Each structure stands twice: as C-alpha cells, then as structure tokens.
Length: 406
Image: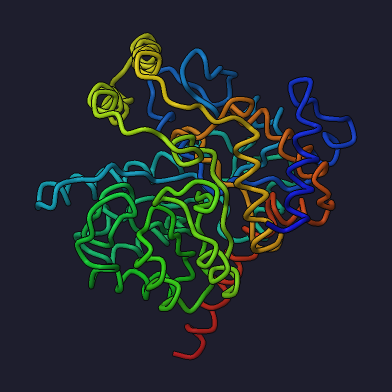
C-alpha cells in the first residue's frame, strides 16, 4: 500500500472527531468551489404530491436528500439529474412502458428548470454550468440511467439529445436489451447490437457515456469503442470492497488513461461487505417497488413507507457504513488515478448516503477530510466539478470534430 495513501487514511482518522466539524476556512473554500454531483435521482421525488423542492425537508421525515435549502447549506451547485426507468420485461408492452416513462421523466426535469427559472436552469455545456452557478442558480444537466426507454428505437436518442440529454448510462441492476449488468447474469457478454449502436450514436451527438452498473465486459467494450473519454458516474472501489458494482484498480487506470473520470458513490450496499439475507430481500422487494409509484402516494403514505423500510432494516440488520468508509473508497481511488480523474456521484435520492453523510447539506465534511489528507484547493476544484465538466467538454468536442468531417 502506498505510503501517501496510508498517511492520508491516518490523517483522516485523526481528524474524524467532534462529529466531523468543518473549519470556517474549509467551509469558505467549499462554498466558493463549483460543486457538482454526477448522479442525482431527485427527479423521482419531483412526482410526489405536495413535495416542494424549494422547501426544506429531512431525511428522517420523508427519505429525501436533496432540496434547495439543503443544497445551499452544502454548497451543491447542481449536477446531472437522472432519468431513471426501472427495468422492464423484454416485451412490446415493456418497451412501450419504458418509452413512455422515460419521456415523462425527461419532461419532469425540464419542468424543474422552467417552473423555477430564478432557482434552476438547464445546462447543455460546461460553459452553461459555470455561468448558471456564477449567477447563483442551480445547474440542471440531464442524464439517463438504464437505456430501456431507447430499446424499442435507439435512434430516439436524438430526441432526448434535442431536449437536453448529455449523459447516457446503458444499464441498471438487471441485464437489458442494451447491455449486461454487473449484478445480473450476462446475456450479451458485453454490449448487444443495440448497445453498440447507442455507443456510436452517443459519440456522434456528443453525449457522455456512463459505465456505472455495467458489467466488466461492457466497461471494456465501451472504453474500446468510444471515441471520447467515458465516465463512471457513481461507482466505488473493488479493492476496498469486492462488489461487482465496483471498479477494480486496473480498470480505474484504463479509464483514466483514456481521459475518463470515476465519480465515487456513497451507496452503502456497495461500500462494505454484506451477508446474503433472502428474507431481508423478500421483505424489502415490495416496499422498494412502491417507489415506482411515488406520484400516486400521499405525504403520509411516503412517510409510512419510509418507516416500513426502516423497520425491515432493523429486523434484518446489515453493516451500516459511515463517512470513514466512504473516504476509504475515495482516497483509494484518488491514490490509484490521481485527483484529475476523480469526482463525486453520491447517488442522492437513489439510495446513497452513509452515517455522517445523510444528505447534501453535509458535503463540506468531504472537503474538510480531503484538506486534512493533504489535497490542495486545485485538487478539490477538480474533484468537485472541473473533472466532470472536462469529460463533458471532451465528449462534445469529439462530436463537433466528427460532424465537421462528415
């Protein structure tokens, strides 16, 4: 193990006291940085009756982790807001359902910016993001997690691009008609023919390709096929926790060598080893399924659902990672590829968050930990936003070259 990494872990451990107090200097630095998260699942919350993103909520009350007051507290300037579609059956009905749901989520994100133009603004380019944040508004990039909405017609990607899509994740926890998942049995041994078509189309349009949730074979094939750098928008370290959703050191280096970025996530199930518990999974499955119907649940029903999930977790306890564990992943990846290829994609409102980092209001704690570990202001600027914007810019620049050469 590298001595710098050991020193960083020791320094972080020594300073992890008094509930991770953030110094005035660290807080001031954090607030002046451009802070972007590459994976915000908050659009699922936007469908909830009576739920207002402009108002303050609490994780304990309704399970949400992102709203404007907490973004202000945590210095979060915005990021990529996700069109997430739950996996669907490989049928005409399933593909139609995914297509309709994806377009509805797209409209919901655009409405976020259009309904509150003094607070949010749609970003299409890195320059947009810097301008929007500089004006004191929150940045709304659009991404897709799970390309099921495109499985019926991959050429529909152009429609999404015209409406603002700038990042594309091909798959989620189930293998689909596009690609194999890291957490399911392989069907294609990598990309399907539709998946290869989507990779080509995304490169042509300048849409950043995202390999989080993809199998190792998909990672390898996308990295080889893409004409632009790629991103893992919310992934962690397999060396720290040997979970199939995490990336091994060799692939981290390959990603960086091609100019890509890995955005470290805080999804607890991927950060520490868990013991298989079929009874727990059986009890949680119908509760998690209800999240697909948030638009039909009252605030009281959502609070009850959150309580039911907490009760199952209490009945079938699993190790609960804390900020120390998250930092082990972050510091290890920083040591492997350097601060020019690392960012934060915590999976807020999609299951992310650990003890001590329950919502976006607590993001300055990460800045304090990184400063304590010896990282510079320039390093932090890269980690919090500039690396992400660089790969977005690289994807768009490659597309412009390709179009010019046609």
